Amino acid sequence: MSEVTIIRSGPYLVQGSVPLDHARALVNLLHFPISWKFFHSYPVQISYALCRCGQTKTPPFCDGSHQKIAFSGDEVADTTPFNEAMKMIEGPTLSMKDLKSLCVYANFCNINHNVWNQIARPLDKKRYHQALKAIQHCPSGRLVPVDTQSKTVLEPDHVPSISIIEENGYIHQGAIWVKGGIPIKSSQGFYYEVRNRVTLCRCGKSSDMPFCDGKHLLNPPPSIVKGTGLLTTF
Image (cartoon, rainbow, N blue to C red; front, side):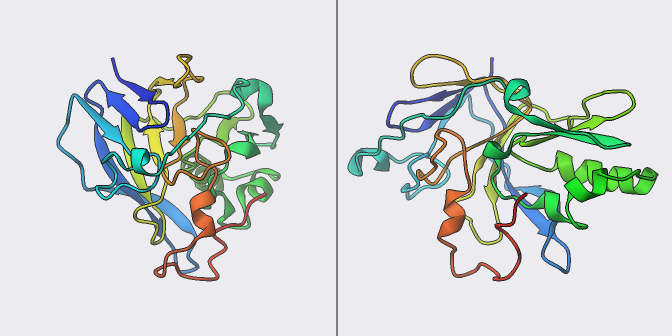
């Protein structure tokens, strides 16, 4: 069975032959993300360890650097179930569940004057599809789309896999995107709520360990394009 185990003061141990690749957001002319590009698939391994201290010299894999820097990585994330903590945003055609604390500032939600404004009005088929895709592209699962009429949750169909996110130049810092309902076991022995989309911290600086909170974006690498609205959120 596929599983991610968080090692106390150490890496994420991934077991169960989970496919691993990289993911990069493709942007439009205004630098807003519009889709994901998946690339650099690694040979499937029965198990492997992913760095979570941000200091490895062999990214995304652990090289033991956490021991040299006395990394702690204490897990402090709220374990309240998503459906109890989220806010339901009702729209006449498309609605969505929103849990802001999970935001990793991937920015797909801000295209076309942001999805909050989009779903506030009736949507034709084309605009419905555009808003739906923007919500589904949210890697952390902060936003979950719901068809207003049928009440059907419209989650993307992810197979169990992991992608290392590269965000506009953040090649060695972006989150670890865990997809397809892979169980995540804490270093204390309990399991976090199993979800279709989760992002784990890879820079070692998150205030919501073990989950990413976008802290890596506070120290932009030289290749970042300024003025893209990357940190905008609602």
